[in-house]
Amino acid sequence: MNEQLLEKEKQLREQLRQLDSPMIQILGKRTCMVKTNMKEQLSTKGKRSDKIKARIDKINLKLDLLQQLYAIERNKRDKNVSLQQEIYRLENQIAYQQDALAMTNKNYLLPDMRNQIVTSIHASQNQLKTLNNEATKYNARKPLEYYETRIYQLDALKQRLTEQLHHNVINQESQKLPTEAVTMDETLNPTYDETEANYRNQVYTEVNGILDASVGDTKGREQFLGILGSFHHMFHKFGNSKKNDNQKKKI
Amino acid sequence: MQNNQTMLEVLDQNGQKQSVEVVFTYQDEMTKKEYIVYTKNEKAQNDMVILYASLVAINGDTMVFEDISDDEWKMLKEKMRDAIHT
Image (cartoon, rainbow over all chains, first blue to last red; front, side, top):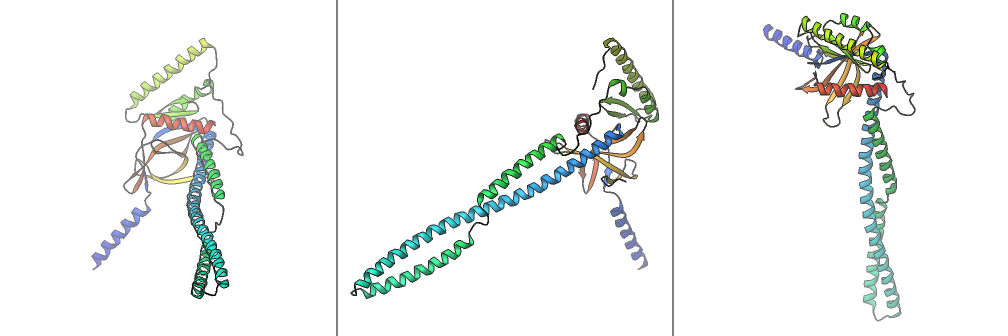
């Protein structure tokens, strides 16, 4: 009995361990470096994208609801139109029957017909009352144009937000973040060699403010030094060509 | 920790549990693949911070961060640059 209890406890602990363990496992990654302020900018934009996505999700929900309501209103309108046609027909029928009744009042020779007409008028009036009640149920809560306008507006907003999301554009209310002018002189600074020395298993190449890392730990130190050598060669080559050009380039 | 930070608990490639900050996410409209850029806020010299980027995938019941191809990495860096410089 104790053994069963211990086994159960073991199972429960294992289940608990699995629940406690993080669900996300890193199997592979790329590495780069950016200036701290750029990371903050990126983070801010990322959050903004999340907010825009949330707004688009909400708009999609609203659009779905509005389209459903629009379809209902349209059905109601169609139903109401057919009911109004039926009401119109009945009103005409009653008017005709009342004319006929007036005729029979003048002619006492047709009492049976008169009774028949009176009965028919009562039936038509009851039917008219029912139809009017029915038609009230199908009265539009809001005109179809209301839904059409809102759907159009929301759809336009959704399109703008989707475009904004796609391009990661800052909306007009937000302060425009300054574009950092990164020149070759600044980014290909010799102090970057010190950075590389600190991250011996990584070689960084600079592209427009983002330092790209190629992880070389599996290839060994020799390969690393080889890559680093060609990296320096590239620096010098660039430096010489730059002297010749005597112009400052921006990436 | 700042309020607007999004933190994630992950298992690194050595099986170690780590807390990382999500910096940027991007979904490719064509492929619908999702990418994540995160940091352990490791500081380098020259006021640099190290970022990591992975493809977000589902493996069974587990979410995993997978390595990305050279083309995907190029594309993701472009998106990051767009975001920084826009």
